[in-house]
Length: 196
Image 1 (cartoon, one colour):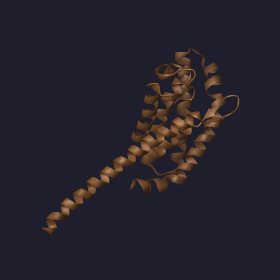
Image 2 (spheres, helix red, strand yellow):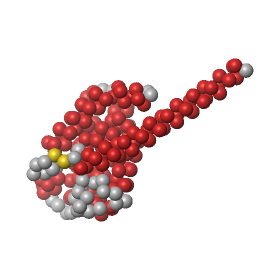
Image 3 (cartoon, rainbow, N blue to C red):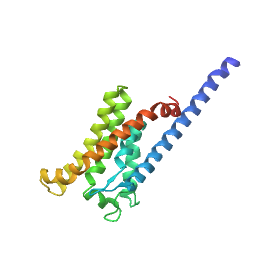
Image 4 (cartoon, rainbow, N blue to C red):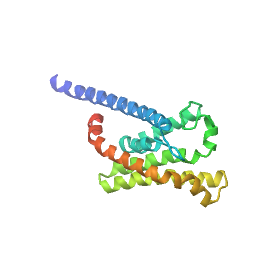
């Protein structure tokens, strides 16, 4: 009887662990939805204001992994597309029309960057690879933003770079470095909380 009860007990523990893991993942995804939304409205002044969205997008990729990070960014974008005032410039456009605006390419880049960072940090523990992932994620966001300006708004490449790349690259590089540093500090604690 005792031997027969052991597999059932083990199965029950496994089911409970899976339930806790799913609950943790769900809470983490929606937590990052909130952080990205808050980051959109935390602006650093200057001639071209910078937000903290990319900071939290990169951090989501590193801590959540590619699938959950894509889910967090996807939920954020879907909520904004549905009209929830989550995006940085809520006064200029709302809902789906925001994606056709000047920042549409950057929003698409959020998803790509989160997935790229998540894939690299999940599959290797090499510090240089993680640094490169954060840098690449930042660059991808900017490149897709510039591509959107060229394709949708018919800007010449030089003009698109002057408007959509040059003013942001230094600030975005600093945010990527800060996000990488925070990730390195949080990584072990985060893995412990996840139950790895």
